[in-house]
Length: 433
Image (cartoon, rainbow, N blue to C red; front, side):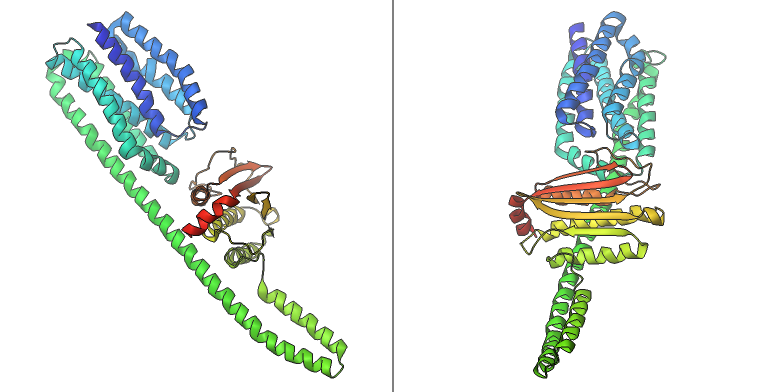
């Protein structure tokens, strides 16, 4: 009946990787990730199956950390976008859940299945897909969102899970397998019962952080909406003032021209032009986008930043809510990064223009020499250096609502944010706005 044992081990190893792949964030695309996983983890699975056949379950259980856990940890660490607490917590979570199922089915088979491995095989055959269904249905989406939004607090949880995993391995296999130590089985069962409660506590804490992040996002959106409405009112007030002033200017110019004072009329007209240019503060025709640019031009001037805004757009209808989120968060990130630099290095440029059927946005600002972002990888904020982080998630969400694409990377001590939006998506954004 060892065929059921061998098949259940193969099934377990296969589903450990499936569970982990569902929850971690790879630095590569799906196809490349799957290919790399198959060519690296395939031999590891084969080696463990061969070891089980040659050396029996007890010996392989004692060597499992060396033959499977550590090699798979190294493989997935290489291809993961996360290298610290988030990765290790996810890895420990997947491995500990799988080990829990393996140990529980071992105990059930020993005490209720007569050690024939049939109950073990059936239990694993059902429990692994059930856990994966639960992960897809309830865990995967919020957990991936949590990894993107929360940078702190993962290390302590990862340490707890690593210790719990080691505790399970040691308690189940050393000095001999747990079923050969019946006096220790009750305490071992208590440890098994404690694990779901521990994970429930951890995920409850993480979920509260996710709710806090969503609240911050909501407050940021409301703040941006308030800014846009205030800018609209200010723009309308400016237009009314300009219309009122123009009446007075027209009367003055008419009087000068009627009395033949052409030279004085020209001088007066130049003064009006200077006043109008000072009053308007126009970077673009769209009042909402212009309000954002006006706000950040003032902040950048206070820092002494060499800034350039090249807005090659007209008065056409635009999804201003999403575009304002993109510009305000991008400029805010640039502003925070430039604050950390020496005065002579502070420079930022913003360009927005049409290229056939696409609206292209490029924001480039100087950044720290040691700050590196690979193209296609979204950096995260940390406490030591907040060059770019929280705002990029908001930008990405706005771009996704318009079915666009966003890339960010560093080159020559500059951080570059590229956004490409299709004109066809504008109607979608306008309806949402």
